[in-house]
Image (cartoon, rainbow, N blue to C red):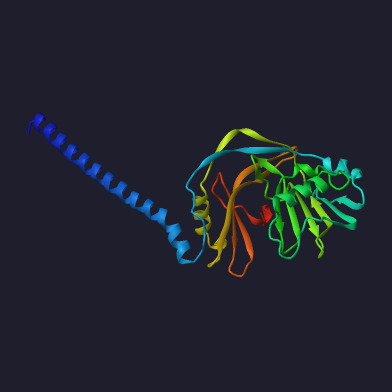
Length: 282
């Protein structure tokens, strides 16, 4: 067999082999496409089968920065401005204060109140949060939530463009008595909150729910209602001179027996945030 004939046979062999590899690649791409389609429908089918109610899940992704906050002794340094209360700082840096007498809020709270309206929020800001004898830097807290079962008004500092710090490290928690008067509060504070220059990719709310649904230990109970999904921040690094806050998804649900729960996902890594790092109510 001459050399040219061997070359021709080799050329034919490699040509046929390349065609075979190309066909295999097409087949694998088709399988991957089918798997992807299956994944995209699994979360909706699973939630429906478990009778979990929810709003339409967004697939939109975005970018958000990490946020830096400086360590601060502001609460310690300004304790003397507070009047009519017994205030102290514990070893975790929380200001805990009890008023000498219960303070009527006069904003219309009663047993039927489930949320605060804008008028109630403005009254709290004007009549209480802005008063330095009541609170230190009270107007720095912007994100309001009322917890009717506990009679607590939780007010959080925001990290970036209205996204609050949800882990309890920048919170003013007002505790009310059975007559909805203010009797005590717990305060934490972060100073000079500012975004860092680098933007991070944020997973969609649909992807965050998929991550939760894949874990047995964080599965939302059957027959629940997902009441809200919102972007927030949590303290991901606690350093000596400053803290770093990362974006997160908070998935809030109400179970069949009326109990509320929240599960948090790191929105940049797509990982579950341990409960010990988070305050469980958004």
